[in-house]
Image (tube, rainbow, N blue to C red; front, side, top):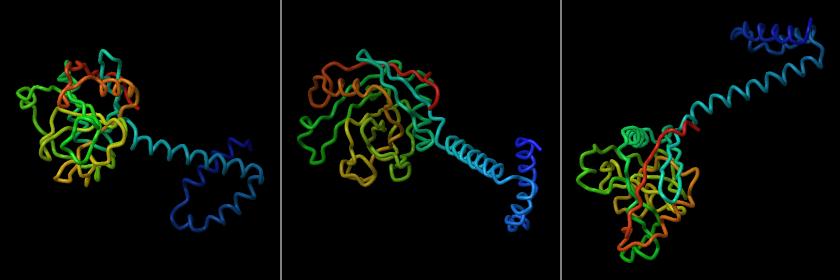
Length: 239
């Protein structure tokens, strides 16, 4: 019997084992030992081990992958953002729907928060904020429920993208990107008095140099002297 034939035979035996015989694995291996040589058994078990690892990896990738990457196109360069639909389904869906409807074509980065322009805040943060800017336009879009970071497990680390809001559940179109780690924006953080934090839903995977360039532009009272227009395209596929 060839090794490949014996391997198929081994799979057949393994598949036909019922619950009662599973407990008698040692008996099966004793019987198999009369069919296979020790070296053949070694390679068979090694192959099965690799197959199990491959299957487990596939299952995990199905659960953790399939996140769409969108591109924010600015005059300073491209910013690529992976949107975590698997972790923040409500927020991610809302954002991707806006992208698909070309709601951000155009959009604007209009606000930058730096250590030097928030004198009245005891808790400092560093972000750039963008969206549709005009309140009358923003008001036309429905708001979404607030997905807190204690539920999504997406912390406000360097490059994370999150929804701007007033009250919890008031976010719709406006978002910001973290420049450096910003734990004060997580659930329980001290930046917002309600302690609910902000709804993170993705992360910059390429183009943080562009984000930092925008963060350093001239501003007055946190608002850029010249807004940075952008367009968002959703054609980068999945990660």
